[in-house]
Amino acid sequence: MIKSIIYIASILMTLGMTSCFKNFEDMQTNPNYPTDVNPGNLFANATFSRIGGVYGVQAEDFNMTGSGLWAQHFGKIQYIDEDYYEYRSNVIDLYWKYMYAGSSSNGTASLYDLELALMKIRQLKEALQAEGNQDVKAIADAEAMEGAMLVVRTYLFSVMTDVWGDIPYSEALKTVALGYESTITQPKYDAQKDIYDDFFNRLSEANELLSHGGNVEPQSDMIYGGDATKWQKFANSLAARLYIHISKVDPSTAASGLDLIFSNPAKYPVFTSIEDDAMLTYAGTQPYEHPFFENYVRDSRDDHAISYTMVDMMKQRKDTRMYIFATPTPNSIAMFDSTGNTADIKYEGIENGKPKEEDFRIADISRIGVLYRGTANSVSHVMSYSELEFIRAEAAAVLNVGSAGDAQSAYERGIHASFERQYKLADQYGIRTAEFVAQNGSTTFSEKVVTESDGTDIEISLANLEDHYKRTLETEAVAWNAGNTAQLIAEQKFISIFTNGPEAFTEVRRTNFPQLTFVRGGTQYKGLGLPYRFPYAISEQTTNGANLAPAMEGITNTMYGKTLWWNTKAFDNYRTIEK
Image 1 (cartoon, rainbow, N blue to C red):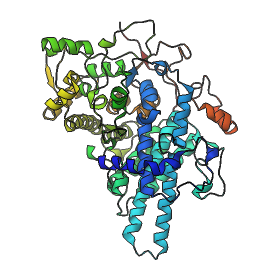
Image 2: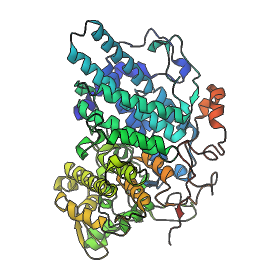
Image 3: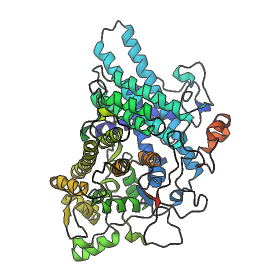
Image 4: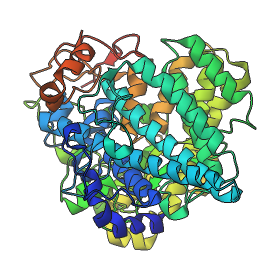
């Protein structure tokens, strides 16, 4: 995959023209537009640009200054407007613009580029079929490419509709250059329910296309390096995620969809181990570096800490993943350096949206763990086997889907898989080696040895994984309780998807768990609580206002008033931090 990401560099100049549209109005037939670009090149660049954009690369982070903060995976230390829900309108406009149209100024590709890739691969498939179906393998390979593109397309649109609700979908990206009779410059906003219905159709189509024995072009594949079997598992696992999203507003459709998938693993394979996890792996060289590393090292910023919500949850659960997710406080590192006593190591999260008048010392706050913040070639988690098992557990325990299996077993497999993934990543990136310590300094002690309040030394290593997993599983806040299944599953899923802010924001709103700290600071939205959605782009009000107007009906204060379709109630599960 590193080879694949580096490969993008060779095509960025070629693709720069493909993402230069400021608005839909610009998407007209252009004699300089490279419509004959290889679809694999388009797919590679769109995958990296858009998933990278979702997780924080290229100044359009849904995650690092939006959903990850609001879900309270992490919090802001400085420039904390977004932690007060006080977003910058121009930034929201960039989220919107880059997803749909990209930008020629920095070579970012877009959903439009992905749409062009789909058109080109379908044209190739049709040409092969027209030749008398002689090259069956070539047709199957084209179908596999098409299937993988449909999965990425659905994933990216799902992120958009899950933060905004109704969005342009059925009429979006329709241009003369893509073979349509005319360019739609003012696309209608589709109802989120209708968008979800189409998601399920597209993922079913992808599952079929990926089942014909073809291969995805390895250099084009940012996720699986060409493995169509894993793409097929991703297609169905993503469908399971989307079915569980709608389980409160439409439980019968959710249950029947999940049963269709879980009852026929031969036709609808899903993730079965952490080796199936969908992750974007960064090459580790500029500009292909992990977003947190890029922010901290390349931009010389110190913006993000781990949230109090995360640290407190993990302390209560004796959860050793905390020592991978977070670093010790700088003051405790200094104390450790002077005494060598691991008892001095401390972890403290930041209260999200703490009022400005209440002082705190940044040296007493834990940062994001070095697996992400200090590792240039780390990963962004798109979807994991762990998450799939929590979906299975909820399907069994809450929706009574018999084919999902035993809820408790799935729940415990989900926790174990998350431990395994994080421990293996820590081992893979060598964050306990002498070389890593020499390069990154004593912050890596968070992944070496720490001391619990009971005096127990904890060494984070693969050899101790089972002991640590069982220790957490036996705590009262984690042990399976048939009377409290929805909360247990939601809380463990929330921990397991750490750094995947868009999905965490969705799950927090959908499940009403875990308890969040009420944002006390700020002025514009003070007292309103967790936003129901992202605000719509200001540019849409001026360029597509007539179509936007129905979508905005019922919305107050840009982000409140009307919940998303799948969200049956506003979040109200808050707690007060004990001083």
